[in-house]
Image (cartoon, helix red, strand yellow):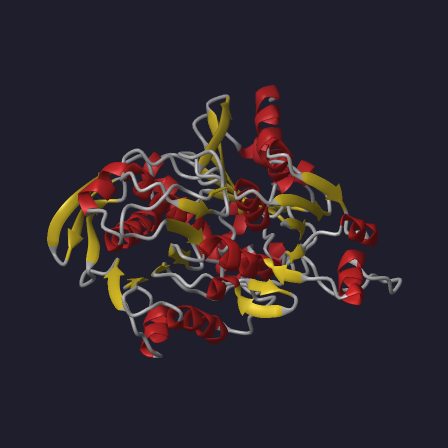
Length: 463
């Protein structure tokens, strides 16, 4: 079929486009500000990209319009629709569906789906699980909201199944809503047989009123797992205990807590995996941080459900190269190292800083540079947690432009350790003035951050 994707440059929709193209469909798409790296990746696949959401795209006459959740019925100040193409689709009665629904019907059907859900660590854990299955010779398909460096692509259909088994597909299972016409979480469409519930905190304040509302969506996911399925759950999270207490019909394997089915003994970069108290494997790798240790346990427990032994999984993780924008070294200048990381929720910021601290030791200085860019952070819902999230950093620099709240006031408990800038240029000046040889500059954002990484490296080189 010919599908036309509205909002094609998002990581999920771009991955869906790649899968559809690989499956032999004709794929076109549109977005506002068609931008790399996804635009480059899509054009390399021969997918035509159109700038904007103009109604003239109806002339393409696709078999199906696939609607990304960037699209809405919103109107501009002058009363005109922000998405004229969507209005034209509705007026014409043309066929349309959401990305998750199209994926469920045309890609996931008949496969053993392994879904990775959680507030934090979804992309990394999905990538770990896909790599474990690949290293075990299982040729999984996958769709990840990032680019796993072991694969160099964010999505693929995968190879055939072994005799008597279903083909495997690993998917990052997002709790964000599906589309403007389907307010269920994306992950309820995926019907997993193996589901990881990595953690659960309040997030997405733009669509969820409170933690209980997100717990309800997670329970909807639990309801879709068959009796022969497995739910891999973080034993340290009270919120997830509440989700399962609401009802569970599948096998449960816990990880993380001392009494869990899977737990770790040792440091995050070198630890034994204990299965019900018995050592079964050892993970030695380049990754740091307790969060990655927990991600690894979850991936090992999920892989075991499809027949991959824990020691095989641990050996695969020794070769795991992480995901782009996860503690990625962008360069160094004057003995100062600049990192890029996707962390944006206060808990993720804290665990990311902690991971770097464990790596560089107590004496090295960490300069945390961040922007509160997610919808939740822009609303100021978690501003009070920012000083706590930055405790392990020596200095903190916040890009405070475009916020509806006062970042200086929120960071006041940090005293002189925190500075706020209203634009990227001022932020770069502040950081360069404070930086010393041997420092580690950790940039954290879920967006492009105005190219701050390269600007810092250039300015440090000139200083």
